[in-house]
Amino acid sequence: MEILPNVLGIHEQALQVRSQRLEVLSKNIANADTPHYKARELDFKAVLGAVSEQSPMRATNGRHFSTTEAGGSPDGMKFRVPFNASPDGNTVDVSVEQAQFGKAAADYRATLMFLENRTNTIKRALRGE
Image 1 (cartoon, rainbow, N blue to C red):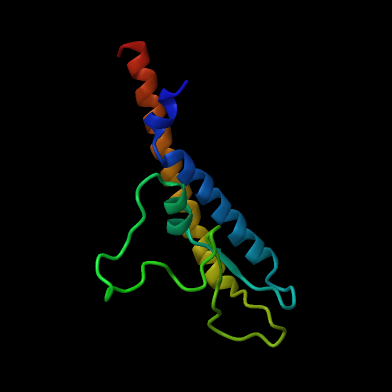
Image 2 (image 1 turned 90 degrees about the vertical axis):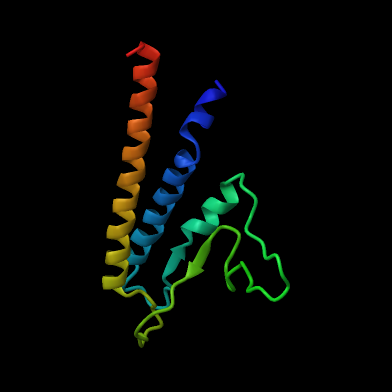
């Protein structure tokens, strides 16, 4: 049934990307005491932009700033720059990771609620309400 992807739009992919980000943040928290572990971050905008069928942002003049971030990878993974250096080489700052996890969880719930409302609207329309 080809109509459902169009009805749900990009929100299905957004939910998957938000889920991946929660996994990355939870791995960071789990490895807070692992020597030489490098905290990672998933760039939501970069990943969703790659999934999106919209045309990518581009500069219209050669003097414009670059539209891509340095150090980014195609999968949107980046290494987080720590606030404080750790003697064992670990770059995880637990308070930062917990704050990011809380924000990411709220974003996930908001996207999930939006999808739930959208599916409820579709159900009501199919029932003729």
